[in-house]
Image (cartoon, rainbow, N blue to C red; front, side, top):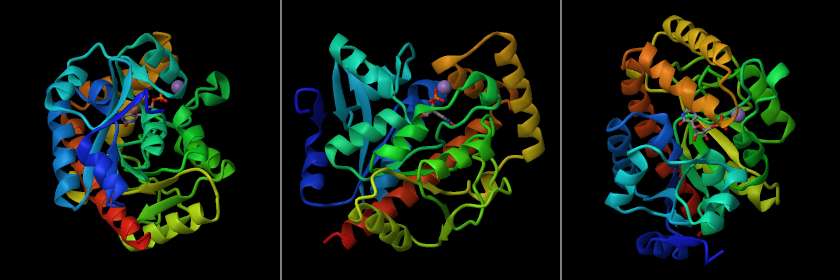
Length: 304
Ligand code: PSU
Ligand code: MN
């Protein structure tokens, strides 16, 4: 693992000392947000994690190494475009080729686990796509959540996905879905989607106790901590649904599939909502980074 993995000094020291560390992904930088909003948001997430008492660890593949913690020039490289999207199946290919890659939720979980980081903040996870009954398009993120011991703090999942099927899949695979200050699974841009979650937590300590119970029992796999977008940043549900339907229809019409589908839908949604989605996206990313840092601090304290 050491051959393939480079952990930044500050992060390695924090992990060794049992201090709070929060993993952050890089596909959201390279494929989830446009330049230069992507690099600004990535840096603001790191600052928010720090402001809430934890050490940020943004993860990516650079020159054939899994890098846990990035330098300023690395963010530029990832934000500039043309970077390969790397999920579980792509990891060995990129490492063997000595290439660069932006890690998805799945690949970031794998890397975080290798480094010994238990809490990870992102915007939205991948899931079961609309129409999966014919395409079988189900994100590798869900399978990773079933097998890798990392808690993923997110704003639920975008309604570009089939959210009821996504929750069914997570139930089948034994992944706890915790609503943070909510009884419902949030739909990324909007706080509600009328789908109940397994349980609700109203504090970081409550979440930390669930994580400890799960992992002390040897119940391998992650958990989803679903945090609603801050109310003032939420978008109009009706308008978003219209944009999503159009984007999904376009993808189908143009035959977009496989790993290209999610980035295609994200980019179209961005265009169709004329930048409103970008402001909302940034707000929820920072909110999730803050909550994740608080959970990481609570979990580190419990383990002392
Ligand atoms: N959903 C978002 N923003 C994102 C992603 C998903 O709202 O940036 C990214 C994440 O990195 C996630 C990946 O892990 O897309 C899922 O891709 P796929 O559906 O191909 O598994
Ligand atoms: Mn897919």
